[in-house]
Amino acid sequence: MASGVFGTPITVETLQAIGLTAPTQKDVADYAMKMMNAGGKDTNAQNFVDNLKKKCGDAYSTECLIYNATAGAVVYRSKVPSGGDLCDWLFSWSIPLIGDNGVYTEIREEGHFPKYWNYIYHNKLEKSGRCSSDKQYGYVSSTEIGEGTTATACAIFRLPYY
Image 1 (cartoon, rainbow, N blue to C red):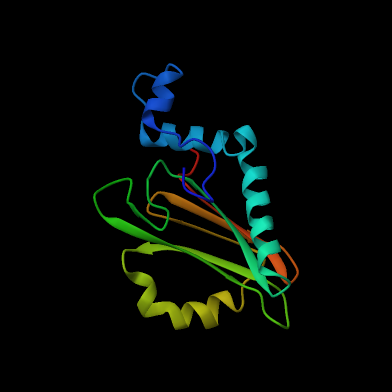
Image 2: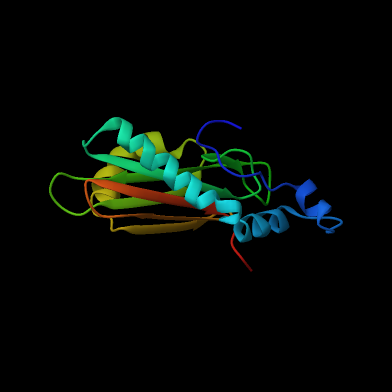
């Protein structure tokens, strides 16, 4: 497995192996959320980013943890569950020299963010709090960030529970 990737991917085959005969994308995503911390994945991921910080020194930094529980293979761009269109996810964070840390997330149509980045940065991220979430296209994005000059920022991309 690639460096910085933890755990076994949850797939249709995973659910078939535990007895679900015809799992849907939602079934896979629900099971992925249930297994998010299984086998110490959360601890291993946190230790990995903590060790990266030790290598980098005492400068301002953000340790990012991203969990993809969508049953999709791409974290930042994915197919819309109801059709063949694509959507993009934004996970942004800020650790300013003065002021509070912040995170901001959005899910929008493919290609949305480059043309709106200045607006997002100045009107959303700079005014954001320590938690942010968005629901679009059948997905949910939830983000949070800790305090201090070395903060952990966490993002979870998933299908919503019904």
